[in-house]
Structure formats: structure tokens, C-alpha cells
Length: 333
Ligand code: SF4
Ligand code: SF4
Image (cartoon, rainbow, N blue to C red; front, side, top):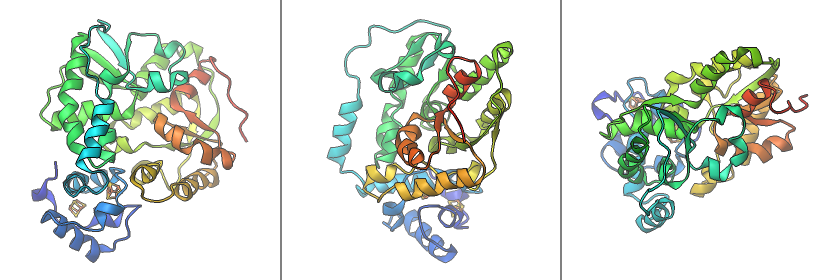
């Protein structure tokens, strides 16, 4: 929720936004207008990357204000279209089969859509997947934030049925939803949450004897949803240290990360390829031999552009599998 009382109209959220052109006076004018519930060009130019929530110094959550206005003014989706999408993603049958376990991994929809990313010893534990466990985070990218808010309780209820005391979130979005957004929505989350990167670090620490250090330089493709949970970023660094991978310093990383930009296509907001090229060339000129992503959607959306620039694009879990000797390391330039 936007915290108007914290906003001091510094304008940083819009001035530092990578997708909106605004100097400080313009940013302040637009912020004032949006705080008064008015439409501004921001609502149309924003590609819902969540960065401004991380950037805002007093943590006033400016994206939450933008998202609520995008929904109110049907900027990306009519209410009917959002409802049709909600119905398409909803699991409507009674949930009769689910594992019971103290500790399990939720793979969101990805075990169905990306089974090749959920292979090997890292995933040998009870798992839940598919529509009943979809985290609904896609909907704030569609200008329909209320849908994810409405569905948060149902997701938590289904995960609670398993009796798990600890849920490992394969997808960064699920972690953001359960660790940050659900509590913000007033939904109690009665289990401990473990981010995938934290889980992999724990697994590798317990299996140090199996690790073959990779000795490569990579650029990290930080996903948009990590804007909600920057405090767990250190696990990514610990992971890279464990497997002998150097995360090259570059322009588009950490707080200045550039999202995969594919949302532009979803929103009819222009061609994402030139932005992806900027990101990939930044990785290249910073000395990266490969780009490593945490989100399978970044993989889907940037893979072709990366390939066109001869930049291997690798899922973080697969880097772990390479270090464990399960899959081979691609030839890197
Ligand atoms: S969510 Fe991203 S694109 Fe939208 S205003 Fe914030 S920083 Fe800019
Ligand atoms: S929302 Fe945050 S970053 Fe934006 S103007 Fe207000 S205080 Fe500054």
C-alpha cells in the first residue's frame, strides 16, 4: 500500500526510473497528481518493474500507488479482460491430492511449464506445483493488482494443507508474494519461507565435497520481483562464492538492475529487444562469460536476444547442477 504520509516528494522514484523520462520538477508534479488520484503519463509508460518501491528512500511504496491507478483507469486491461485472465489461471476443482511433509518446495507453475529446470538432486524433496499453487504475481504486471491481493489467502491456505513448517519457493515471485505481499495484505503465513537461493546455498554447504568450482565470470540478471525482497540478495552472492563464480560489477545490477523488459510486449508498450540488448552488452563489456538468471521468465524472454549476441543465458539452479557435476558447463568465450 502507498504510504502517502512517508512521501516527501523527493521525486527519486520517477527520476531514477529506467523507463520514464522525468526530471525532478516533472516527477514531483506527476507524483502530486497521482496522489490526488489523477491520471498521468506515468501510468502508461510504467512497465511495472517494481524498482521504484526499492528506490524510494522513505519506503513509501510508489509502485503501489501507480498500480492502483493503473487498475482504476483500466490502463492495460479492461476489468472484463482481467476477469477472463483470472478465470484462466484459477484452480476451481476441490484440491484432493497433495503431499504431507514438514518441508517442501513449491515450484509455482514451472514444473509444468519448464520441467527441464526442475531436474536433479536439488529437487529430490516433496514438491507442489501447478495452478493450485500459482502465486498470482503476474496480475500486477497486467494492471490488475487486486486479483493477486484477493487470491493471496487461497494460496496460503493450500500450502498450509500440506502441514509444512517450511516452504522453499522455487520462483522469486512466490517468495515475494508469501514473504512480503501476503503479510501486507493482512494474510497470516503460518510457515517458514526459504528462498530458492537460500535453499541452494544450504544444499551446497552440506555437499561441499561434491562441488567442482566453475571458475567463470558471470553477469547476474536480477528479476523484477527481487525488488520486493532485496534483503535476501546476499544468498545469491554466497551461492556464487560457493561454486567459484564471480559476479561481475556492472551498470545494470543490484539496485540499478534492468528487468527483462518483456512486460513491454504484454502491455503493448514497445519492443523490449533494444533494452535487452543494452543489458546484455553491459554484461559483455563488464567481462561476463555468461548471464545467470533466477527467474525462468527472464530466461524465456531474454534467451533469444542473448543468443544473438553469443551470450550464454543460464538458470541459477543449472549453475548449481554444473558445480555438482550433474550437467556439463557450456563452452564459454
Ligand atoms: S514500477 Fe518500474 S517502470 Fe514503473 S514507475 Fe516504478 S520504476 Fe518506473
Ligand atoms: S514516493 Fe518515495 S521516491 Fe517517490 S517522491 Fe515520494 S518519497 Fe520520493
